[in-house]
Image 1: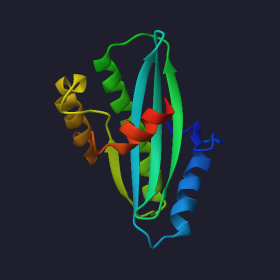
Image 2: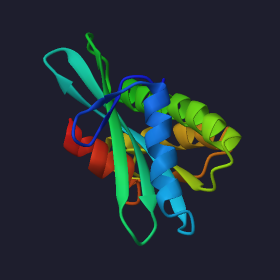
Image 3: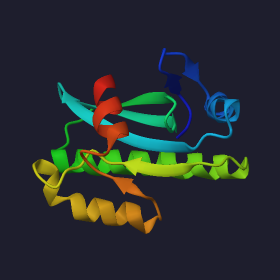
Image 4: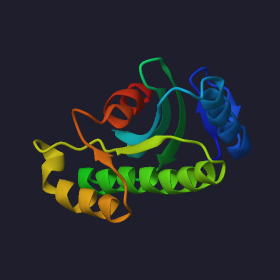
Length: 157
């Protein structure tokens, strides 16, 4: 899941390069507090779905870096299936990323950001998706606090 991410400037990274970029950014100023955020957003274009997932490394109070990847599914699915797929993509990325970073003894807080809201189309599936993600022990943010999904990933679609 961590292969084929890109930097904000579009440089392609393999999994090892991605982890090194994250680790080096944190080690530049280790005394700062860090939050790692993962989120995914999607858009339907001409019978295909464009999913964009992001990893944000936030140096709290002092900037951030983000990495992103695109996955295109060439089929038409309804909004509810898209929301589930966004959550599953973010969940899979989060699990792999946290496991690797914890083994490197990197200190950070983690949030999984979902492009869901208590109003609108996503309100009917929000409880089920949030409960699934929480069952994995993740802290979750939804709109309007889900910046990784609802702002950064959304901008990259």
